Length: 326
Ligand code: 3EB
Image (cartoon, rainbow, N blue to C red):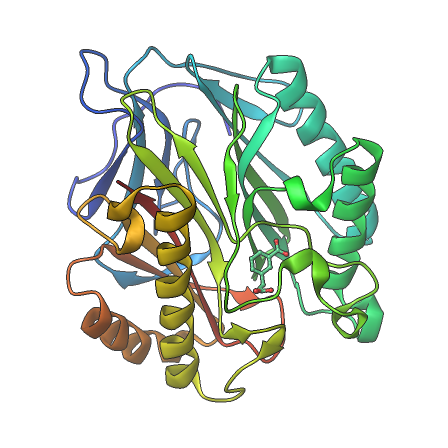
């Protein structure tokens, strides 16, 4: 990821995630460009094939000047309140080791930069379902993440929203948003909290919040919604049926948004609005058209991007994450 500014491609399908209502300064903290090989920080791809939809680029736009730079592995951009960091590395080893190393670096980076509060993490790791039983790479990933969090004194219950998706190439990509002040976790009343999953899903439970709320400088509340799948309680619902899983994920999101509206005392968070946008991941690329059609029925106006990626449980066929604001 060389460092320079570069013009964004054709603005069709661009969605601006406003980190503050329009001020005089409008600068990108990050531009996630889908379906393009752009790699000039803070403009970046996520390493997954873009399957379609009406969302091609998320511009995370701030209203105070953004500075950017990089260390050995990590690229960063920051304004007064927020820090976005990104890295990619080859990952052929045991994910418990590589993940622990990358998370140690991540935590050290955000702490030393003065933005110690993690708000959102995206984990894109190769071959997430490779290996069997407790050696499955996702389970090894959870061990490494858990180890780094424990070393840093971070309790699972304080972790932020996250996504963990398998890539088809050999790069481990990690992105994180961190802040000077803490976010507020929201859990889903239809789902067991990730850190309370029983050991059947792996020796080390995952550690992520279902969503993280953060107050923006202009007083709005942003909700960073984790990858949300067809998980009810702790179990996978509707194995083998991608459309039933889609409907269940939508029901989970509806419950989560209502919970966020209640917890954060912001009625407008209860349903997606004009500022919201979602990334959708499907295990089988051929499922995208029907999933997209179904999501369009549920949410006629929500910008959607579809990606081909593995979901961390083998029986999950799709997952949805979102940006939301009210
Ligand atoms: C689930 O509900 C689906 O390990 O960071 C979703 C979002 C999932 C984040 C993670 C896992 C993670 O358990 C899987």
